[in-house]
Length: 461
Image (cartoon, rainbow, N blue to C red; front, side, top):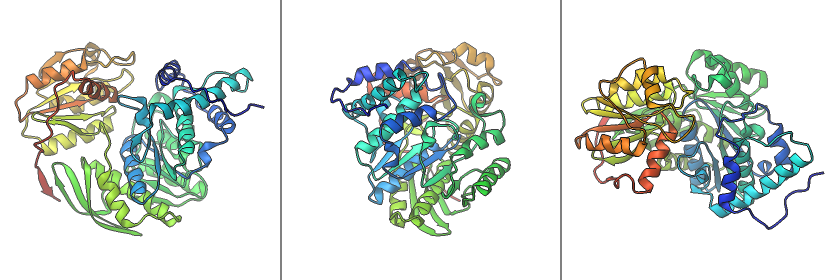
């Protein structure tokens, strides 16, 4: 029998990171089963069972929806954990309680407990090999949330759903934001196959909220709900939003749907697609309220307004306007293109672009490159990142002007230097690129941002 960790000797934080990075990147050694995470959590005393959870799957919008739902729960008075991925600058970003990143010392304490169990399971031949990077972190998050006595935890699925390490909980509500093509080598080559993996988060006796709009995807999720005997709540685009209005690309609307009427919701996150994420998060909150959680309408309004999510049309400067967006798959690229074309069609745009090799560069470039007067091709410092020259070779649409600068910070600096104050600089194509730029800002490699002159663009629908 494997004994739980009881030692007071905590591995130093930097050493924890060294061990973690030794597991490789997010997708390295990806294993499609839940045996390892279940074995680790069992020895830890199943910390994931000590608090209720919500699980959020989907191709895009997971992080924003998680942030919104977590903020709603916080405004309702719940001490709320949020587990998300990937991080942009520090791994601590992935594990938050009431919006605060886990401290180095608390991370080290939870990691030490998990690592002790892992090594014991390896020595006892219960585990044939070490768990993946993501399994490690998921166990750390569950352990930390239990130690910190959270009232509720919102979990973002890493990839897929059915066999994702987060899917070991009996979530009080399952959410599927949308389904589109991404990670096909792992999840399947069409939307129906990918939807079947996402639908794996659906559990008997628990409601399901879906923001999916594609008919084929909707049918897969509906069939899974029928088989499981659970209720499906579909938000179906913007049908539940009325009096839609935006200022600076940030939307206000009235939410009117069965069981929830909340007027005067104003989002701080930019983009019309964030209204869809907000409707999905609100619908999940309503399901939790119907299950007995104390979540009044005012908490929904306040939570949706308070929620922020980095790296999604994030403004870091106004003159010129610099927008950061991961946009690492075609669906996300289309959302960004719609936002830029709808709000800044009369402004010259420069694109700072990078991509991982396994992404659909051809399709994404055909969406983003035509928006730009100049495309600055760069490369974050990862082995998975595509070379700028390879991006050009893979592109269906050749940029009007191209500048190759391997260092992301220097690429952005060149774009700033070459742009007039009323220009737009879009940094997009990879969350790793966004992370590299944010890190450069924190380190002072890019001049301080100026956020004192907000854009004012308004339109009522």
